Length: 89
Image (tube, rainbow, N blue to C red; front, side, top):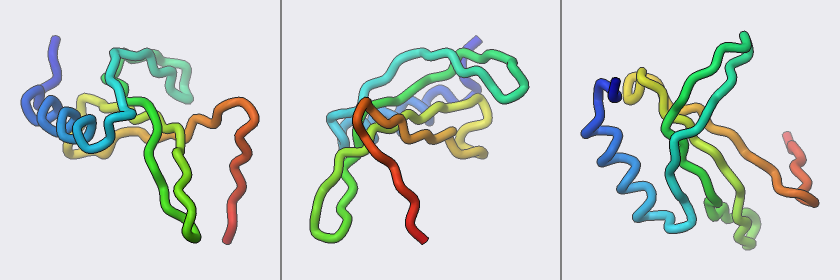
């Protein structure tokens, strides 16, 4: 069964990939905190973030659920080997 808002998802994801050429799409498996599994449209790659005059390419993974666009995609930063993530507040 397809996504209930298939055309909206297609248009939004295509626009995102056009804007950020480092992103790609695939059908991925997501395991929720309760252990349940879902196959979700996954957009992954790097997004450039400007911070204090420097540009950092942040590895991200966006998971689009059937509730999209009423619910935002699940968004994760996926650090690569040797990458350090620190929180400042």
